Amino acid sequence: MLQRVKANIVVPEDIADNPSALVSVRLAADGSRLSARLSMSSGGAGWDNAALRVLARSDPFPRDENGKGPDSFIITFRPND
Image 1 (cartoon, rainbow, N blue to C red):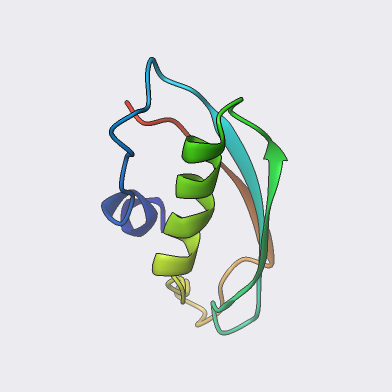
Image 2 (cartoon, helix red, strand yellow):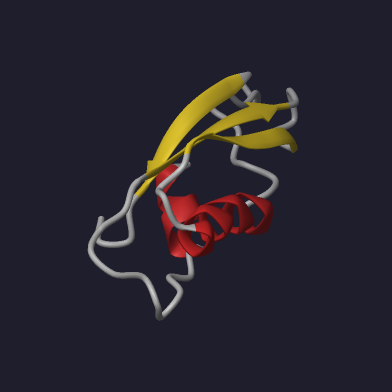
């Protein structure tokens, strides 16, 4: 799942250093995104918004071998990861 998300991220050109944004995500049983909210801001609106946009581009999320996705997860976004 993480590979899918990272493949969709677009780092804005004006991002300096390596800010960290923490996002809480809730998923439906079929892997579709129910919600995504910023749990901890990076301190910059550009990077925070990029972290939220990548989750929209990654929807629906892959299901596991049981055909179900996780109910929720927290993901940390850093542009240099």
